[in-house]
Length: 348
Image (tube, rainbow, N blue to C red; front, side, top):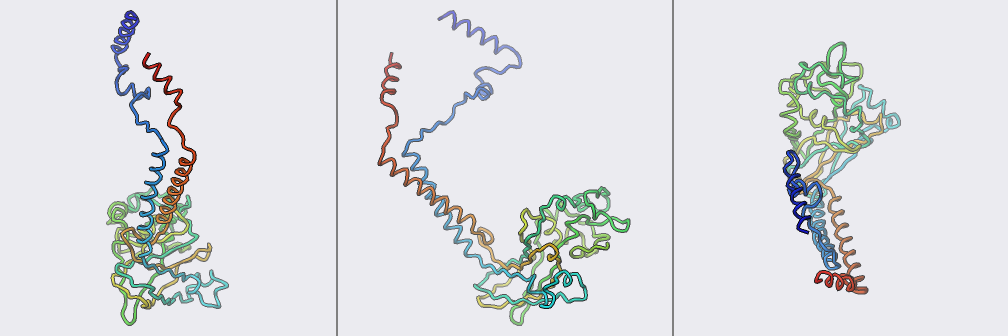
């Protein structure tokens, strides 16, 4: 025994003396051999039942709180793409939207269901619009948006990188299809002013769109997409474009249009004067106007609250089922024969 232990210690010392090889008792060696100490909890019936009960006590109140916050948000949603087409042209929507001689003015009347406290956020919502299409998402040039005509590598913007042998700024399908419906609001005899500043992310305004980059040769081709841009305003100040350029992940999305910084009382009637310019009819899209307040949780969204209630209720039910099974068929923590044999072997 002494000889074996001495030999093994000598070999271990020689192994440790080899340069570049980690010590066999070091932290790195133990980590590679998966010998580090770890927590191995014993899942007894009491701990399992208590864990599920604790999860139920956490998630059910959390779901109720978030649902209450979501329900406190007042939201008005109005689909206007069909209602703003004259009756005689509803069978030919493309003729209506492509014919410039047909007036696109439209009036909508929205009734406020509950009092809405400022700020009231204005969104436009598009359905069945796939901004996440691979070809659409790639059709932009971030360097050009930041540096302007100084960057000539606009091949990613095809087929809208140039027009008439002149480059387009900003190029690409995303900028070409920028949303161009406009909205004006009034209540009673007074106009509701819309604040359209700071609707885009600050990081986008300061770091992705140049302060000295101006639109050039934009929407001058044979195919006109969405709205036009002011050639005398730098891209960093054209927040409509910046909001639109942040593409959505889902085919149904909302984008911020502005804010109404006045309170609205219940049963007030909001008159909306809009220009129905954007062509969503060629691909079967839908256009909606959304007015919404906000809470500490954000906008109206019941998903998190409903999911929390479901998880909490499920955990409570599981804990009750486990408790009944444990009471009816109690199970010992270990085999008595094995534990007695283990004690004898350790004592000997």
